[in-house]
Length: 242
Image (tube, rainbow, N blue to C red; front, side, top):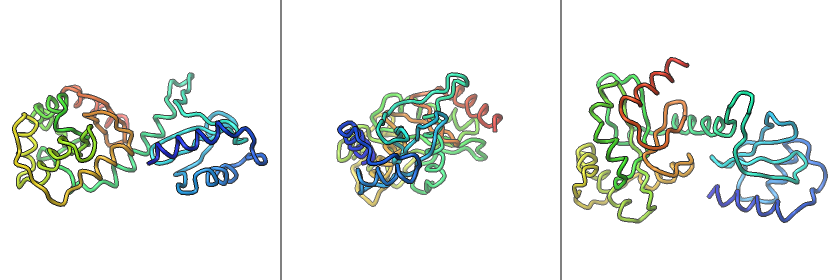
């Protein structure tokens, strides 16, 4: 939904080169956006390190707007002096907040006895690299890493991959069903109250485009498969940097 709103806004700005008055503060920018897309309110509008440029967020979607309201662009804002990706820093903050609000009881969790780190993983039953990651679960847990699975069937809602995720969730033993399914075994079809659609939507909100998508506790997104030893090193480094 948010991506649709951004497209509408970009189209509207491109078609309009006249700004009704000078929008030199956030209140005026918000008013302008409300007129263009009254059905959605921006999550935040704030100034950037670039004078006269504002960052606007709708969910996890980010674009930039000039103070006079005339120019809008969507892309990555980099600080070449510090080599910081300012856009990704904002996205990381968004994901961090979303992760803290997640209900672990609605995830399938593989955890050692005394976890030192928590990794939240968007996974797809049919994803080859997701299967490779899961095959290393015992080693991952041995490093003190708790893995919390969220389902993200890449083919979308109401597809065979989506149903496989539902089958796993609705199994009496979700962990065993997950492991068998990741190994290519068929799981009996089942239907029950499940969070699969909500998790798929959450993944989109967080900017997940592929699986496995690994989320560190601070909201950093690690796209793609990482060997267990590398994951442990990354998580240890993050913990030391705090």
